[in-house]
Length: 96
Image 1 (cartoon, helix red, strand yellow):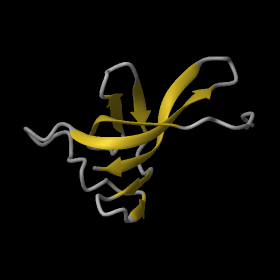
Image 2 (cartoon, rainbow, N blue to C red):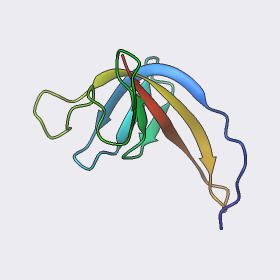
Image 3 (cartoon, rainbow, N blue to C red):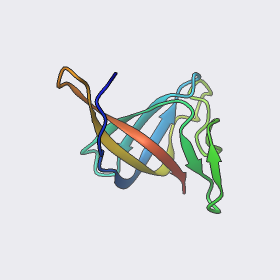
Image 4 (spheres, rainbow, N blue to C red):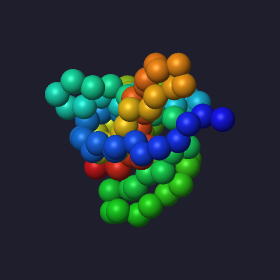
């Protein structure tokens, strides 16, 4: 069992792209941070409606030519593995 605890969530605007499996990458506007986007995370549409799972409407399939990035707001945090290694992961996406 993995240890549990509080993970501070940071919020920033930036660009995101998803692959065909629904996972992807988020990069902040100033390009100081990038984070993994797991498939099926909670997201909000531009009018503020909440959704659980599925592909956010603002994030097109990465395999579609010319549809590679979208502006989003993301909540992300640093997750630590038992071996001490860490990864930055997105917890939610807000379509702008």
